[in-house]
Image (tube, rainbow, N blue to C red; front, side):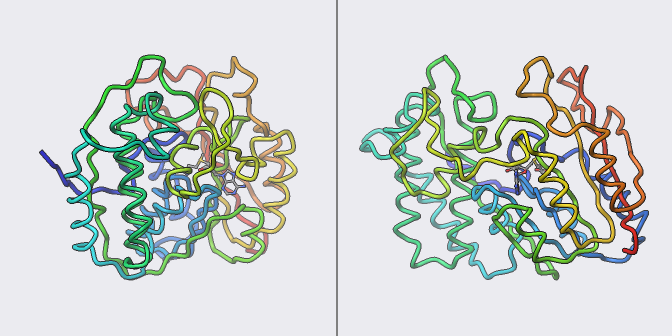
Length: 344
Ligand SMILES: C[S@@+](CC[C@H](N)C(=O)[O-])C[C@H]1O[C@@H](n2cnc3c(N)ncnc32)[C@H](O)[C@@H]1O
């Protein structure tokens, strides 16, 4: 049976998602700006759920991430461009009706089949992505993005992983029912500005009231977690892959914030930022027993860098904000730095 329940921007798993931290972020902004609707730049937006939360309250938002797969979601749920959702639904329903039994192999199944997905599921994903590409010229830009987002979220849901694509599970994948859902398109009054670039470049061009900064904190590269979705979204079909985990060549997508010189990049970001209030999320989601998981910028260094910009307060968040109740968070710290910029 085909199920087409509405799909929302937050219906995905994402490392470091701030799904549970919206309230403290909002409190920091309300404390400074009261009910005035200011302009918020979400510079490392990941899923985009922080921007979505504020856009739903008529804040104007600038949304950015280095990964194109995330930008596809912003174009779907945060854009104000036109979209015929009935047309999108018709495509999605026809995709869901594709039977897997007689499908031929394709780029996606040959690359990821029997690894991240059962072969037949991978064939279906690859075929649908090819159809979306072929149909591009008959679709409005936002409709094209909405179809890719729907496919990406559906593929992510059935992947043979622990929730990201650093590796696939050692147990062979079993065929699952790939089910694309129809994105729910909110009606909003505000216009969001969407970007897919290095935050350090972007801050040189924009002006905002609040900059929300939520960069990676350790050596684990986001592109390694989400390479399969990035490949599916871009559909450039690279043929060279590294290692068993089938990561395409992706040096240009590696974040400076996960490298040794992260602190320099953070300083550069702050010095080019034109904002009145800076809110920074800091956490250590990982068990720091591996060196890849150690934070690239120390808490003290972060505080000192922010102090160069203005008056800093630190909100050490309580456990209830980030623990869903299932995971043990012995080492987990979740901080929100709030910097009132001098002269801002
Ligand atoms: C901690 S996650 C953000 C999570 C997000 N706040 C959410 O709630 O989903 C960090 C994000 O920064 C992005 N990123 C890393 N380096 C970047 C850069 N130089 N410029 C822009 N985005 C970057 C990563 O792709 C990742 O999505």
